[in-house]
Image (cartoon, rainbow, N blue to C red; front, side, top):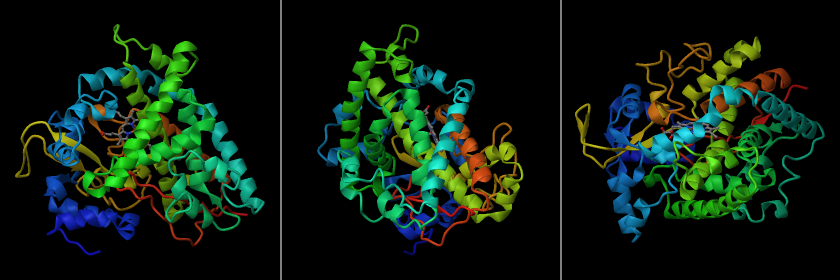
Length: 458
Ligand code: HEM
């Protein structure tokens, strides 16, 4: 598909093209050079670092997409009940503004302080070692990836079961893994964060398959509306309903029998006498589970791929993995971030470099484009984990957002990434990338590989 900046709509729509998805950064660069542009549905696309940073940190925008004129028009077109949407209290705090955002975030934040998260390190090390042991043993034995958990029984009841063998699905991707290679996504990058967040929250590990399906559909819903088909939208709504149903049962269990887990703590939470309502609890749990399922996996896979593709960075990392893995985490979050964009709504009329944006207009903030803004990062296209203040203080990238919605799970994601990159350097030796086509998931907002085969050194 060809598109140029004179036609920002076509340029944005080109992001749906699988070939562009494999490397969207040249499209981002052209958008950035054009400054803020008006895309499909009147959505304003913002790609410069300073503009995005200003909008994320300032009070000019809302995170509540329900305040968007685009969303309301679209709901009305669908014949949906706008009033019901506005009253929906299951909206997670990611999509809310103060004061609700402040209150809800505060209730959860204790579980994610750097200190609380640091106590999880031994368990994370144990999980990473166990997963790598298993993957390497399977690869050495020449067994296919995931044979054990891809039986029809295992897939039953999962919302993505019907598409299990479809092109672009994890199963189709796993089939392309050469003999002797491990499949890094399925065997390490995915199960690690999923197990960690499930254990933290206290949902049974055996429900992972179901949660995976729901999270996958939900993740699609963070794509901008013009890139989402009505079927995708419907599937994500259905997934949310099923997810809520599942969580209602878990919440009822915890009310009756509290345990030592985050779910019990949230059920019992009091903040100055203010408990979470059942709906707020549902929204919060879905947010944590979905964030735990859909993001760190891509940090691990995108970072490993970058190391495999950049020998200089890899050698630098391998020289001292314990000290340098955090820098690889930060550079991955800058160079190829799992969350590529977020949306906001103008809370009042604002002006961005002469582009007038009236209140209620949706803005698309291309975090990944800001992260490669040459006005902020020298030589931005290079994967250079040794750059800047990585590992010491604020690394400056937008990979975790900025401002009041800055990623709550950042300390956990950093720790999981750091432990995993260290183990990969120590245990996979001179691993290489086999000659197979890499397929990205069908999402523009979340950037992640369906599969990443890695051939360990013998
Ligand atoms: C928010 C990225 C891992 C929980 C965010 C935001 C980004 C982000 C960009 C800001 C969204 C916005 O401003 O609209 C990432 C990345 C991760 C990651 C790249 C992995 C590498 C996690 C994990 C958790 C988590 C593991 C927890 C289990 C959250 C929550 C918010 C959030 C609760 C909402 C914060 C708020 O609205 O105040 N994340 N995240 N994230 N993230 Fe993460």
